[in-house]
Structure formats: C-alpha cells, structure tokens
Length: 254
Ligand code: FPP
Image 1 (cartoon, rainbow, N blue to C red):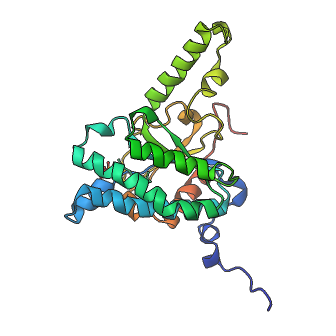
Image 2: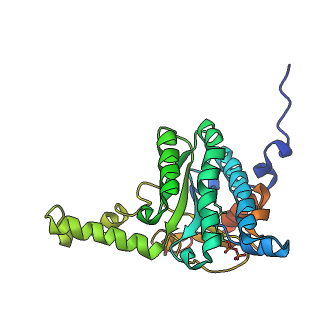
Image 3: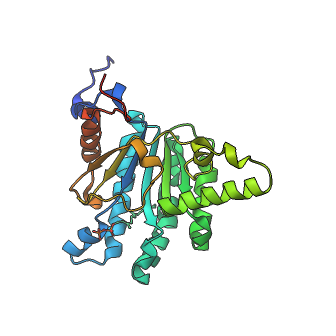
C-alpha cells in the first residue's frame, strides 16, 4: 500500500500555519474560566473544573506531537484557598482522579509529569497521587508537563531564597557569589527550559502570581475562550500569535 500524502487535517498545527522551526520550547497556561463556564450552565463550579480536566487532556494531546519541550499548567494557586471549602475540596478530589484516569496515556506518550508549588500544604491523597505520577513517568524523555498546585510565584521565590539562606548559613555557599543562576537553580522550575509563552484563557489580562521569575522575557497571549471550551485549534492560534511576535530580549531588532 502506498502512503497517501499528509493532509492538513492530519496535522492541524500545519493548517494553523505554524512554522515548526519557530515553536516555543516552554508554554505555560493560566486555565481560567471554569467557574464562568459552569455558572452559564447553572451548574456548580466544581463541574466547570471537571470539564476543565478534559481541556487539560486535549492540550497535552495537542502539544506533545508538535515537539513542545515543556507545558506548565496553573491548577491551584496559593490564593485559591480563599474559595468556598466545597469548591476547594472538589479540586482536591479531582486531582487524584485525573492522575488515575490519565496516567496510562501520559506514560504511553512518553510525557514526564512534574509538580511545582508548596507540597507541604497539600492533602495527603493529592501528595500521594502527585508523587506517584512523578515516579511513574520519571524515566520518560518526551514533553514535561508541570502542574502548578498550591503554587504562588512569590512563594516560590521566597522558598528559593530561604534555601540559599540556609546554605549560606551552613557555609555551603558564599553569599557574595549568589547570582541569578544560583536563585534560578533553587526554584521549583529548575531544569525546565526558559519560559517562552504564557497563555491565559477566560479573557483576563492578569498574571495572578504565576511564574513571576520565569516570566521575565515570556510573551503573553490572552484568549477570550473559557478554559473548558479551549481546543487544540485555540492552542495553535495562540502559538501562531507567538510566532508573529518580535522577541528582542531587551535588545533591538536585527
Ligand atoms: C480557574 O478558573 C481555574 C482553577 C482555579 C482550577 C483549574 C483546575 C483545573 C482545570 C483542573 C486541573 C486538573 C488537574 C489534574 C491538576 P476559575 O474557577 O477562576 O474561573 P472563573 O474565572 O470563571 O471563576
């Protein structure tokens, strides 16, 4: 049987006009709009989060094959504890459920799972599920999917600074030698590629304490779609927008 030529619908990222040579290596997403999605349907907010997990799955499926190195998803912020306890508890039930449901596919796809944030504050079942997902995918060499859970950008920087202080006090590091690389190496995101693109769904233009250090030179794209409605095509459109940007990193256009 002769192979038929690839059609655009086989590779939707090609149909979106993406240039495979100019893809970002590391994309982060603020998955906003679950609550509004549910309220518009007269459903409890927890149903919006549940629908949001389908979008998580779609986006992982859409990103791995195009060759992104890293995808970082904001699942629960250090400020989200202020929400009604029922909503918070529904999120804590959802995380182990999703890991249980999707781990086989993630493992098969060669994706490595990583979690950033303050684990100490997580419920036991969530901590166990997260540790298991990390352990079972640790040897995978494909895209790294990082879930930010109980994560705050300021909190991440404070914890890194605390680590440096402890090392300095113990004499393991010279305080005058502390530079950007030393701090970055102690962040939760150490080892991930530089962040290239932050996408926020739900139409807002805020950073919401996400990846404050890592965002230094990232491009920002706000998408009006609510997270549970976010599709592979929406992701490819955001990547196409990124490819139209002129990144100068503080320099001038060449
Ligand atoms: C923001 O929408 C969304 C969240 C706080 C939770 C995001 C969580 C998921 C998509 C599930 C994640 C699953 C795993 C496995 C980690 P919002 O509730 O603030 O929406 P609103 O702005 O419309 O109220």
